[in-house]
Length: 208
Image (cartoon, rainbow, N blue to C red):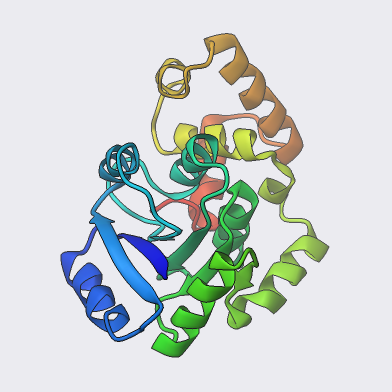
């Protein structure tokens, strides 16, 4: 029996997924959360075999949440179920530690297959995104060269957080965060925060 935990900020989506999966004999939904903070609290006292995770939620979410989950629960398979079909977003989720990435417009049978695959130790990438991911690697999009930590700091910075705030949230020194900032700005050949924000919006890494 695959014990599944659902994380999505829309109650209707969570309810629909539970209804759908209740008809699958080898999958049982053991918990749900509407945000990253709620998820982390739940996982402190509960266990599951697969985490079905939305990328965009209020508060802690996306790559930042995946990185934290990887640190706290290194072997827990994470299957991202997202509305985003952009290759960059899928690539970042996978590089941060997700076991699979699937868009919400897929048929239920594909979702069920993806859950089973990541549970068994495999990886799953939405077929629609496979070609895009390969193309992105060949073209060499600037932010694709960043490490997981550099990307995490980059996203937090362009989302409006100060270096001091990022350091506090990640339990790192301001000097360390500043070093990451300098490195990713050099890698991306950018010189100001404004350039970084425009880049992030253009590549749909944050909402404009």
